[in-house]
Image 1 (tube, rainbow, N blue to C red):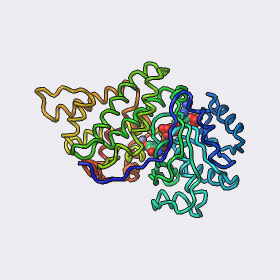
Image 2: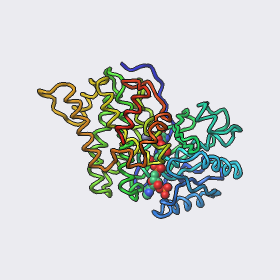
Image 3: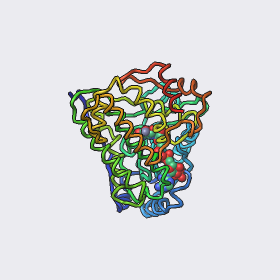
Image 4: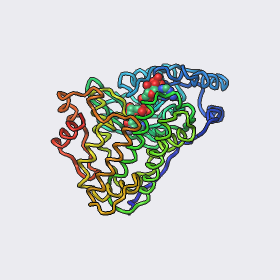
Amino acid sequence: MLGNFSYHNPTKLYFGENSLEFLNEELPKYGKTVQLIYGGGSVKKNGIYDAIVEILKKNGKTVVEDGGVMPNPTVEKLREGIRIARNNKTDLLLAVGGGSCCDYAKAVSVSVNCNEDPWDKYYIRFEEPDCEIVPVACVLTMAGTGSEMNAGAVITNHEQKLKIGHVFGTEVMPKFSILNPKFTMSLPVRQMAAGIYDIFNHICEQYFSGDDDNTSDYLAEALMKSVVNSSLVAVKNPEDYEARSNIMWSATWALNTLISRGKDTDWMVHMLGQAVGAYTDATHGMTLAAVSLPYYRHILPYGLKKFVRFAKEVWGVNSEGKTYTEVAEEGLEKMKQWMQTIGVTLSIRELGATEDMIEGIADATIILDGGYKVLNRDEVVDILKQSL
Ligand code: NZQ
Ligand code: ZN
């Protein structure tokens, strides 16, 4: 049964090979000063930066540079972005990149006109913004996080060894996002695979919770099948537009709040992965991949019915003559084979984690209660050890 909910997603999307042209339609709606947010330089190499600057200039905008947003953006970079926005009186924060740039833009947007320290306010006390929010827009160059159509903003604090996400309200979502699958084609294959696993896991996090019959779970299964099918094509031929466009669109729907409506959600793989990320600064999707199988094997007995459904519906496991547990385990085995095929890691050691970090990573793991089993600390430690 679906619980009660409201659903409103205000982000306008432009999708496809010619979608950048729509920047011309959107820009006149905002003030003169555009803070152009980008990462470590990929957009300069692949020409996206030049194309965007040309459109901004044509529309009479003053461009304020805000490059160097690192993967897993830090609180120090966030404070720098706030300073840039204040000094230049930014009217629009335009993020050009993956989830890191888009998340960062949102975190800046709620902090420019706020006097308190954003880390304490939003990431420790989890308060909501009570100041004017600077509008955010996104030109996406990597499919994965869904940040282009959601209100999440994950920030890392290396000093405190914490990586924390705040899911804000709809007012923080990008006003518009431009999704051109061709822009994702310069992504290194390993990074593409990390993004694909991130998408798949976002769906799992919302699927592995509750056992009722609800529409959201059927939507989740369809999305998972699309991601698996397209990923197998994309790893063989990263230039395949059909596969890359399906992956990009699935990423948006995987985490734009639709499939979580009316049901509980888990998110423990992300809590474990984020804690690993706080210690290793590893690629987000890879941290999820490395902890997933030990976690899912651990909770399988508590959510057996759903793991059987997952095995049959997503992985096509034939259940004839097998126990429920055998079917469920076969599903996870097929998932493991797929993960190996697309090239994501199954070990946090490969990401830089070591035995002596386990206790600290366990301390940094936020324990949530929406999944099939509320973990205790010993279980967290055990899962992390198995993920090594
Ligand atoms: O920095 P540049 O040079 O641009 O290179 C980036 C970066 O190194 C590169 N890249 C992106 N597009 C490219 C490209 N390289 C070549 N060609 C392109 N077209 O890819 C690298 C990773 O980029 P990043 O933005 O860090 O990746 P992703 O999209 O996975 O974002 C990760 C961040 O998002 C957070 C993660 O925790 C992490 O901090 N998440 C945000 C969520 C949300 N808003 O809802 C949910 C997710 O679960 C996730 O936690
Ligand atoms: Zn994720």
